[in-house]
Image (cartoon, rainbow, N blue to C red; front, top):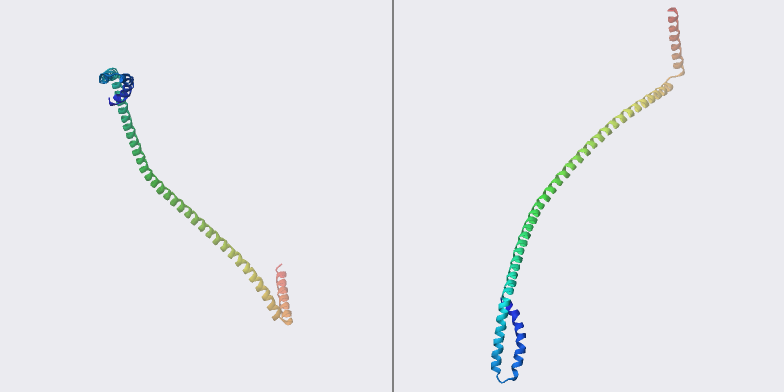
Length: 193
């Protein structure tokens, strides 16, 4: 309502301006002033009469618009608070989920580490076993080679010793004994035929 008065007052003053200007030359300035004031009040009354309903409707529409805006704002605020609460809940759950993911990742990493260590231990044991077998086989081969070499060396050493210790007389005596054994064996086998 006050707003309508503020809007109508400048319009009335504009209309009353020519009436006041025309009364400045007469002697009856007070009656002219009274006439102008009455004219002004009359115009205000007419404007109030005709503008009351549209101004009231305007003000009511404005009030309803403000009320709707307040209601919409309250609803938006409520929605925003609900979304904020939802996001806070999600953030809380996210922290829990992150903790769970970290724990799961640690557990999986530990399991994989244990599995890798178990495989490495198994591989190390297999390699050690293979190395032992290879060493044992190499030792057996080396023993055989050493035994063969030792045998050959023993034969060579015995041959040298015999060659060094047996004289020509010993050789002749051994040859004669060998021949007599061969002849005795030949005579014994010839009579058995």
